[in-house]
Image (cartoon, rainbow, N blue to C red):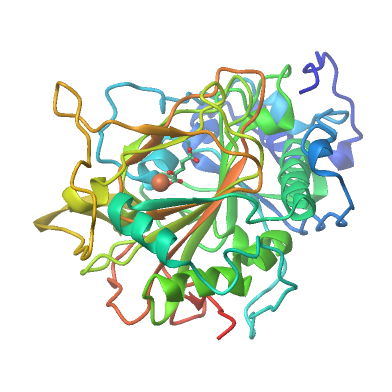
Length: 429
Ligand SMILES: O=C(O)CCC(=O)C(=O)O
Ligand SMILES: [Fe+2]
């Protein structure tokens, strides 16, 4: 990664002020510092960041080739007074939290507003996953999935697609850092109906370095979600590749539906820890049917915070709470009256899950190459460490549930605005 540049000046014409800068100036007049509280602002990009042109690239060239320079740092730099603390590294965080808790810790949001994608969105693309996985999982993979609740599929994305998606994340981070005409600001009052839901959008939640002039655009963003497949065309194509539907079908899904998708940036030096959780709390159905497709867009290592799973914990760990909307539309967790276990038949390894001396789950660190898909059962416990290394670890994931299972009317995640159901995950059959 390139060295961060030290930015000391920011000059733009009056008409070209980014929204946070404009807010800052307005605020000087009324001296109402509350208006700049970190949880009262969201920014929205009005025009989509273009999908990068796919480039032919050798495997060993990818990732390293990205332009990480930030040559135009914008309004965020001026909002230094915003009190945005990233407390996601808090070791006392609730261990059964899910990713909406993580989102809740970062309350300043920028939104990438993409093009309208409501009509007949099914795209069919050229196949590019490794031949082994086209058409669904084989028996060996299915057995592994049953036993351990996850599955690693290397080279599921081509080097070209991996690089294009990664570039798209960089371009988006940069656009959000620069602000300007592309960015629309939402001001909303905590606890009021003006809360802007990230469902179906690309809202960026920020790191504590969001306003640090030394930081690269990528280092300012923690996550981008929860609907990047709705508003970022490059991600949309990848998520809706029938390859995924074929995998879901081989896992037994009859009508797999996409509930959310997000980019987890995990930037160099600032990427936050993700506390142990189960995705089935946000993708809650009874019986459980949530599964996550998690993709590394860069090589992941122990140093840069690779994904960690507790193999077999999907068999032992019930869902004990679910994520619902509170009165203002925000995510909140409610305890379930009865814990919900996944029913897993046909396991062949009774040595998992493994426990440490204190009874806690033992996590396996999954170091994988860019382009690798890690499938996770919604009940599996997983986590990742903070990235204190100098290499970023950009990943994205999307969640599915069984469309034939009831989705709670008060669930936090809801179908995209104007639609009654979550989108189908297409398959080739
Ligand atoms: O990318 C990671 O480290 C984990 C992300 C995750 O578990 C989630 O978004 O639910
Ligand atoms: Fe997760």
